Image (cartoon, rainbow, N blue to C red; front, side):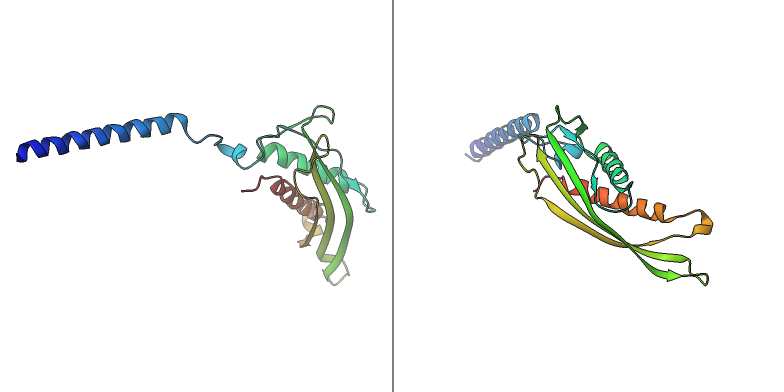
Length: 180
């Protein structure tokens, strides 16, 4: 009698193990529907192309719009699965406007030459589909950071600005990530 029960238990265990293996195999072959790997997993899957026109610039520094646009494009190309496209064929449009740029001198040397600067950018960004449906909430981004530069070492205010522009571009692309 003991042998009979142990053989039934063994057969039940084998059947349970077989079902578990079959279920695991099924799960591994199908996976989770819609799961994606790499940077495609954190960005919107319904968008494939983006058009980025030159950011409007309301400041007196004429090249800021072009420089920020170039930096945003580099960030999109390096971090996102999106392809750049012209306005007529793009799924979405990422537009921006530099509202203000201010520079404050925090520290000077004995010759009144600036050594520590605080640069502040105020930027408005909007990302929408080609037909105007917003893909992210329109937001205004303000960055205030201290930019140190040493002219004797070949650094300039332009290089300090570029560092902040690159940080802004990274923040803009971070906003393009899809919500959890």
